[in-house]
Length: 256
Image (cartoon, rainbow, N blue to C red; front, side):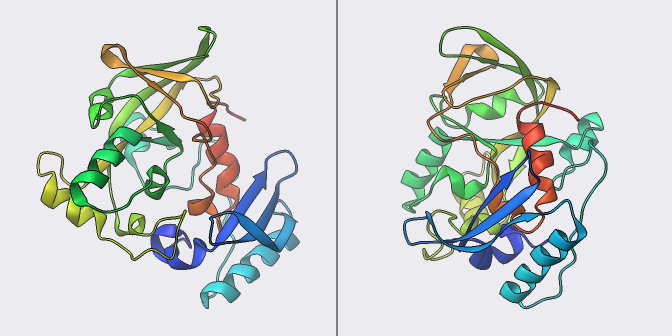
């Protein structure tokens, strides 16, 4: 199994990581009580080298108390992920996870539990869309436009709804919060949806996406990307850093 937030949430959520695509370097800081980086713990480490890979593996071995092996992939079509939806639907594993902030707020209110959209480990957070309406995009095309009205070449197709796992019970912005069984609460309080929240999409036409852009969903349901909501999913990929580069390529619709 991969060392990730789904299996070692309480450990990995105490770190802030940053990956530099241009230099293949990963840096790890301690996360303070405000969710920001504080003390430098590791790096920058060049994970394209054997020495860097061994150094990173040893660092996380010490933190989790288990032997680790750094895993890489030489295929530009590969993505380290926990879903087979892209491959099953389109023979393309480079999936992107989108979470609707309106849905998270509705769930937060109904359950009476403090939640954040980041808690669901998305690659992209959208807002301005009605709660649960992102589910309507499954099987349909989404486009991206700039604040000035110009249209990006980037297009997504919705693959599936995202089934939730126990790992999202740990809030990456506040690891000290009590862990909550969100999948169980979703299934109990939203039987019409079950333990699902968010959707997986795949890029069908390459392009880029930036904070402040607008994603147009089917039926002219427009959802803007709020400030600082497009981010590399470092919480998941902290110990499988080679996946960060591949994930970023997927997010921006680029291929090697």
